[in-house]
Length: 270
Image (tube, rainbow, N blue to C red):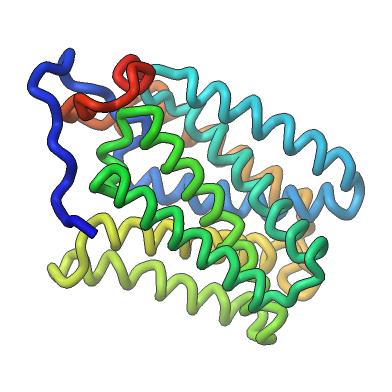
């Protein structure tokens, strides 16, 4: 596996705008909120209207992803709507696979971990980089969202694995995942871990952390506020923060080099 990114063309039309936000503190806050919202909303509708959850969630997921891919640049509302729908649909997908296969949580977690590793390896071999700063073509964007989708499903399974299968409960799971998510940042700041590796490790772990917090707040075995209330509060906070990002544009990445000269025409146009 080559460690050298593929060369970029000097004949390209100019810098391209990244289709994902800059990694600010607000990014991680909204990311955690969407994971918790996805968990609580999926549980809330799953108990009351599973058909609405499956069909409606699937349709909204498709609409959100189409809007995201049609956009020619990063837009806060479009991007975070897509992330929110992935959070809901990723939960449904993880639970559906487990139910459909009749597999145990360790097996399901292992399947998603293997899928995630496979996608990341294929992405790197294809593009020479896994950096979110390089999401400037449709092909890289497709790799990015595939990785995001699998990471949400993996995080859902991992959170259930620790809380229920291993019997840790919500609070110990929150502590473990919180420390595990912070560790890559510490190692990156210490110069031990590369930025790309630190990001993806933290990104994957954000899902079970957010889901564990949502379950702790909403479930009777936790604080018992109810999944509906947790969903509503999370949605309000998400709307407020995303509106702030949309107005302030504080998370817009600087233009980066144009895509490879052998990229598809649709990639260059993106």
